Image (cartoon, rainbow, N blue to C red; front, side):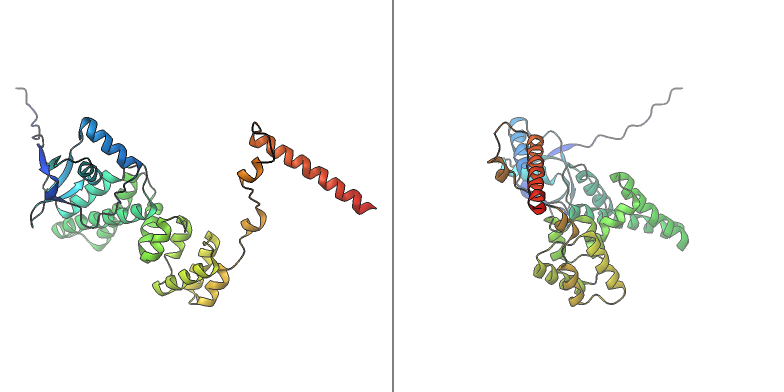
Length: 295
């Protein structure tokens, strides 16, 4: 007798009023009114919303958005009153994991968005593991193995190494003011990871040193600050001294503005032709100086 496999019932798409949906609590991803948002609005006005959002019932009333924050905002700006959505009953941990996974597909994600998202998903996976541990009475060693599995799971789902996942999560140890400078790219990712090992008081003093020197920290400077912090020697004076250093790159690199150079060359000159001409003129100038010195 031929058995027929049971198929799970398809989830029903419903039209839900925008006014009944609120954002996910502590949603780490920004919804920006940028060019991509305008493209989404234009698409909605032309063909509607093809991919339904995923929401979950809120015990206090209405629904919580899980996957579809940008679509919700675009629908509002496009003048829609409802949005197609799938209502799904999810636990807090299931909702966090789905929210993070659906947003990590985006092309542009800032380091701080990724850091907060990885941390939220890791905690959710750990919570799920703890519930299993309580049920099967796992040993502390097994709990540790499951925690390590959670990190590996976050990395595998995002195509990141476990080390990189840990590095991103380190950014959440930064003060909000320092996180803002990472977000605005005033502080690069790798130096920011090193600075996350400073205490909060040291981070405040670092911001003063950064403001005083008008310099952004290099990786080398951040690593030395981290070392001083571990040794208990990360004083404000030490920070000011390190941040006021002339960087090697600044001492060896000369940058010429393109607009400044262009006025000396024909419009049809390529950057390579401009470079060759400059080198040739410098060689002539050097020979002239040598002849003058020989007199």
